[in-house]
Each structure stands twice: as structure tokens, then as C-alpha cells.
Figure 1 (cartoon, helix red, strand yellow):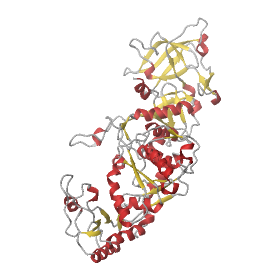
Figure 2 (tube, one colour):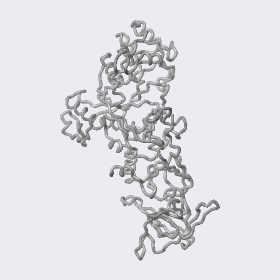
Figure 3 (cartoon, helix red, strand yellow):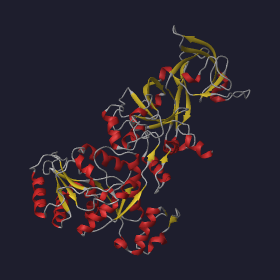
Figure 4 (cartoon, helix red, strand yellow):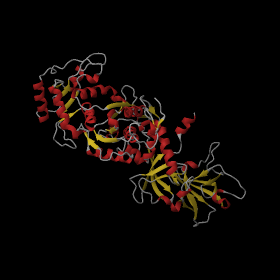
Amino acid sequence: MSNEPLDKEDVADAGVTVEEPITMDFIRQMVAEDLRTGRFGGRVHTRFPPEPNGYLHIGHAKAMSIDFGVARDFGGKCNLRFDDTNPAKEETEYVEGITADIEWLGHDFGDKIFFASDYFEQMYAWAEMLIQKGRAYVDDLSAEEIRDYRGTLTEPGRNSPYRDRTIEENLDLFRRMRAGEFPGGAKVLRAKIDMASPNMNLRDPVMYRILHEPHHRTGDAWCIYPMYDWAHGLEDSIEGITHSLCSLEYEDHRPLYDWFLDELGIYHPQQIEFARLNLTYTVMSKRKLLQLVNEKYVRGWDDPRMCTIAGLRRRGYTAESIADFCERIGVSKANSLVDIALLEHCIRQDLNERAPRAMGVLDPIKVVIDNYPEGQVEWFEAENHPQRPEMGTRLAPFSRELYIEREDFMEAPPRKYFRLYPGNEVRLKYAYYITCHEVVKDSEGRIVTLHCTYDPESRGGTTPDGRKVRGTLHWVSVAHAVDAEVRVYDYLFTVENPSDVAEGETFLDKINPDSLHIFEGCKLEPSLAEAEAGDRFQFLRLGYFTVDPDSVRGHLVFNQTVNLRDTWAKIQQR
């Protein structure tokens, strides 16, 4: 289908006003057609329906961009609805975390926040209605027996021996299930559809199970809970949703949702499926993310190595960069694996525009400038952003003793190494040219100090003779340095698709043991002393860094948000 923008005239006949052209995809084309024909009375009403059994991840950000984006583009509404039908896994903590993530991403649900548990009584009444129609029955088979009776993709299922109970017996048993007479797992309510259907979802699916678990909102009011497939379409119907936008794995479930709605004779939304996001070097399963948290592979749901919204936010990603990423990947019907380099490209592009520059040394080695006057301090003016003069300047102190990055010096360098080595001259950013003359090592052979000289006539990086040097280094004055801890991250997994495992393996076998490097004793320029949690900077030549919430006054902690190497741009140039 076309991806050409939809302009104001395209939807004007339906009474919808759009302020900006809409980039069309197959979902928006279907919505535009419904508006043109007057289906749903010209309304557009979507919903974002997370289950509160974990925190949201980047895949949910894509779903949100579609659910809220379609409503926004066509002047409609989007509900936030929590599908809280499984009290064994759901918590108020997740409800609050999910709500915070959605608001941080900038999506507006206003007062349109709902819960599946708001509709438990109505769902129960509809279940009794199906029983009375002879279209649902109470089954005593165990979960394992139900799976066995269900058949396979090539063999039809078998009817349960309890399938032909009378309507009266089923009503009595179902009401006693609700009253709490039976233990968990003793009985279920199933729809009576077709055990020979080629669609496995239509082989008498379970509608209710017994769970003696307190619910985070309803407490102990219920001991039977609706299955997601039973609840999903009913919730959309109750809320008057026009376009129920789902990821592609629910396509085979759509006939079941239609069957329930048709049998009950209630309002019928239109379900449309799209491909979910799969991102390299990550897992997109809340179950797997929860396992990473519970088994201490990460430090929590907001660990910056996680693909959760909370983790990305803590790492320093912006809501704008995530929105840009979601727009770039678009909406598709075909599953694919998106390169994480694109996500990194988006945050790099965003921070390049907004992040002030600063100097920081992660792995310091001391430089003593022997011919620089002891006790003297010069303050060099440094721009906060080379392309944005409106961001102003700061003063960087320069003294006889400095720190440079350990990797910026080699005693025996290879060819085309333009940084500091014995006898080589380099430029210190904003300051002077220096030349190394002596290397001091400790008893273990580790370099601890470099003795250099400076050219007083090279102030600001220019010399009377006009000579140029190939290498420019960042630095920090020893006497003025601010101590910090810096956390540098690699991918959490060693392979692009950690869910693609051999027999006997799990995704945990693909964990990267070197995904976190903590640099203690880092040295930062003094302008960063007052930085607060969430502040973002570009450390010259190192990357973009964000102050972590673990920071306290006197002990700064930074996360590396992303490095400076734009892998995605190089891929696009091939």
C-alpha cells in the first residue's frame, strides 16, 4: 500500500480536521476508508492495553506510537486500559510504572484510563448468557488433559466427556465456582465451538479458571478470573473501540473474538494486526525480562542494559529519540528483525543537537608539564556546543598537572597513531601543544606519569610558525578535577537474536558477561560538579553520558548513553 502523506482534503468529507499531513500506512489507510464510508459514525477510538505483569519495553513503545498516533492523526481518542485478568502475576507497582512510562513518552490518554477488572461483573453475566444458550460448559479435565484432548495441527481434537452437561448443571457448577466451592484448577469454563476446527483457538477455548489469588484492585471479591481471549474483545466492545490494533500473533485469535461478540450480539470493533518490533541483541518478552531481573543478571527493570522504557530512560534516551525510532521503522504486516544500530542512531542524532559538551577522563593517566609554571592556572573558554552558540561557553582550568585518557598514549605506537607517544607533539583541546619526553612506571610496569613540555606560543591551538599536529586530546586539570563513577555498557547478549537457540540451550546462554564496565576514579572538568540526575552531556571524543539517579552530591555517577561511532550511518552508506 502507498505510504504517501494523507492531506486535509483526504479526510475532510468525514468531518475530520488534520493539522499536518499524515504519513500513510496500511492501518491508517483502513481507518481513512472507514471515515470516508462513515463506518463507526465517523469515530476513531483506539486503545493501548498492557498487562500489568512487568514494565514496558521498546516494543510497547512502537505499539503506543501506533495506538495513540492513529487516534491523534484522525482527531480521535485512545484509552489506556490495563488487562488485569491474572492476579498471580500482576501488581500495582507495574500499573504505576507503566503509567509513568506512557506519560514520559508524551502520549495523552487524559482521563481515559480503564481496567479489565472494571468489567468483571459484566463479563461474568455474559458467560452465563453463553451457558444458557448452550454455547459454554464447565469442564473437569485437568490442564494437561485439556491439552491432550485438543489435538494437533494435523489431527482434530476430541470432545471432553463433560461437554454435554445440561445447561442447568453448567449454570450450577459455574455459580459454585464463583462462590469458591472448588480448589484452584479443579474446573474451568469452556466455550463450546468446534473441536475439529483447523484453527486451534476455536477448539473449545477456556474462558474462566479458578484462581484463589487476591487481585491488586478487587481484593478477594473473585476467585474465578477471565482468560485473556475471553476478555479482550469484550473490553473493546464495552469501551466502544472502533479500531482494535494488535500485534500479528493475535491474527489467529481474531476469529475467536468475532465468535464471542457474534454469539453475544454486542458491539463489534474492527481488529487490525501489525508486525511487532524485534530488535537485535535484545529479548522482547516480559517473561524473559522478568527472569533477567529475578535471577540478578541485571540490576532491575530499569537497568540501562535492558530494553525497557525505564532502562532506556535511565541510560539517557529521550522520549523524542524513541518517537523518531518508531517513526523510522514504520508499520508493517511482515515480521522482521530491526538493527539496534538504528535506535542508537536516533538517540545519537538527538543528543548531538541538545547535549552540551564537556571533558571527562574515564581511565586517567597523569601528565606533568615540566616547563609550565608551578601554581599557575589559566582558564580557557570552551564552547558548550560547537554548532549552537546560543548555548554559551564555560571556563576550563589549565594547570601544570593534567589527566589524559590512558588509551591516548602508547609507548611503542603502530603506524598512523597520531596521539601522544615519546617525542610526538599533540594538541590539548582549547589549550596548548605538548610533547612527551619521559615515561614513569610503577613497580609492576604500569605507566603512572608522563613528563611533557608545552609550547607557550601555541595557546589556543595556533603557533606563529603555523605548524599543525594530527592529534587532539581532551584533558582535565588535576587540581580542579571532579571525581566520578562512569558505567559503560555493551549489549546484554552476544548474538543478534538471543531467542534463536539450539536444543538444550536457553536465551540465558547468550548473556554477555562483559556487558557492564564500571570505571571508578574518573576525572571530570569542574563545570560538571553540579550536574543532576538526568542531565546529559557529550564527553569529548568519548560519547554521550547521562547522570544516573544513584548520584549524590560529592559522588557523581554517569551512564554512557551511546558512543560516538554511528554504525547505522555506515550501514546506510554501503
